[in-house]
Length: 360
Ligand SMILES: *[C@@H]1O[C@H](CO)[C@@H](O)[C@H](O)[C@H]1NC(C)=O
Image (cartoon, rainbow, N blue to C red; front, side, top):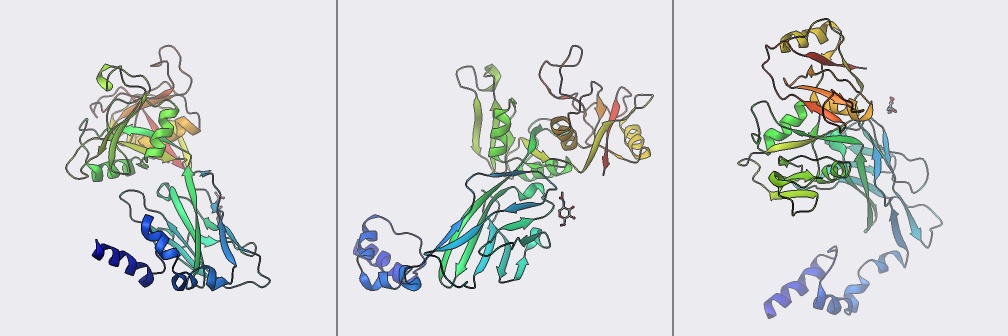
């Protein structure tokens, strides 16, 4: 006990930056005048640095330019401006390491990694630390910390960036529950998408997504959304909701995946073509039309955001056959809007048309 006390007591004086101390020791430390005078208040002669960021998440879409607002001030206000350092980074979601985005001192700044050349400070007014990110990518989704450093004083705020998009369950051609986490990431990328986060799946569930196969999420958990409780999907006794298998082994366990995609810079269309085609003929037909055969993510985005509604089944790049319905009608599948799937038919069968994607 004495040893523990000693360690805890020694730690704070060695590292004045420690954010908090718990319970009992807290009181002792705060009563120690010599310690208190060396920190925070003393440095600034009673001036407090305050950093403000919006409380609500920012909603935007892939390809947009976005400003993450962040500004700071002093209490009471200072008469002259002081040099500060500004640092932005993206917070860690389970599994993904936190990322440096940008560091700025005065007018000089450096952006890092994925953000290199895409991020800068807005610098429209004094005491503004807002960050501009150009040409948003699906991976940019997440929480960002804005940190203002003035001498040894250091305050920060968080901005949450969300993308408008669509979540879709994905199963590869070789069938159900075949993907470990890493394969799931590749599978989504191949459909012009990323693995969905829990928040994205939750929002899709609120909008009615119901899927009875478990799929990977970005945080390494495996879950599935149920709006209509029924026997094979956890039974009648459980309330509607998102059922979770919890965290699974990213290499050893195999499931389906929930992918997320946002708007596309281009157009998805059903190719008007005289005959039905094999998969290979379908790919060629899109090329001849100056386009490419569409990916699953692109078809879902067109269905959700561009109101693509077509009762003709068409090939897609992964070898699946689907069609998008926004206004359900007789002879056009189920009475609920959605992207219908015929699975992965024989590639030689000549029963289907094709959906093409033309980049703009
Ligand atoms: C984003 O900003 C860049 C450079 O300022 C501009 O060229 C581009 O058109 C903008 N994109 C959008 C979607 O506004």
